[in-house]
Image 1 (cartoon, rainbow, N blue to C red):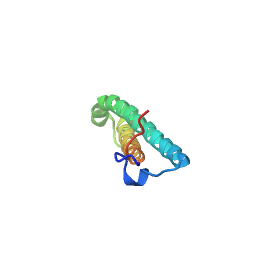
Image 2: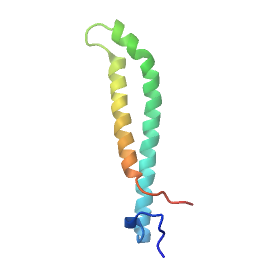
Image 3: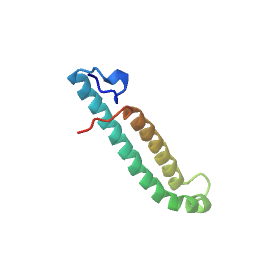
Length: 92
């Protein structure tokens, strides 16, 4: 009998399909970890962004640019990780 806790599309998978599903979820978890690490970096960058925007002349605001890049990476890795991790995880 199929496991009723699993989504319908995952109930009758072959062993190869289960392995591919596990690899996809593992990659999604890796992306979520990377998003978390970049959020720590963005938090540290946030300490300098205000000073950089206040005192740097003209368009030279490297800390602000790094902060924006870090936010883009967090968003990209986070959304991709959530999409790849969708479904019920395997219980060992």
